[in-house]
Amino acid sequence: MFVAIVSLTLLGSALGLFLGVASRRLEVEGNPLVAEIQAILPGSQCGQCGFPGCAGAAQALADRSAPVTLCPPGGRAVVQALAAKLGVEANLSDVKDSVPMIAEVKEEICIGCTRCFKVCPTDAIMGAAQQIHSVFREACTACGKCVEVCPTESVTLQPIPVTLQSWHWHKPREAAC
Image (cartoon, rainbow, N blue to C red):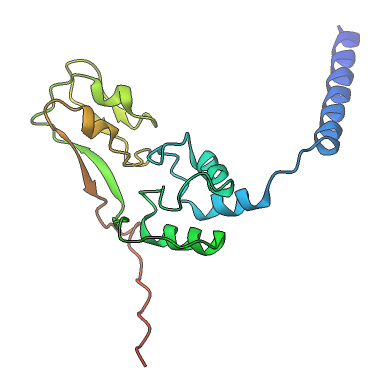
């Protein structure tokens, strides 16, 4: 029994050491521009841009195959930052500046059809058939897919209410000279 434990420990340590060295020696360096663009994007992984997440959107932006206005949750600030980083002009007339939103279920008209939580990409909606549904605020990315499929219009996107945890000072505006 002791020999088996020692041999498995040595084998596991040797394989772990081998994999650690191999991951360092065989590492493929990616495009540093993709990492910089991904840091600019909000990171909500909502898929509203048409890509499976912010990493896919950052890769498309680095390849110049997507417009800088692709991120609806980011608003004007993200579009301006992306345009400055990529050195392109951005048409801000099509971009609406939105406040952070969250899905909310109106319990009095929810029929429990389960359509909303079947389409939710982050599993932010909890409920069961013929039961009232609710939203996990921490998991909701406000992608709006649940709003589109709700037959009774009981799911809506609402601005995130200001609480003690989410309140912050706004930066003062620069004085006009």
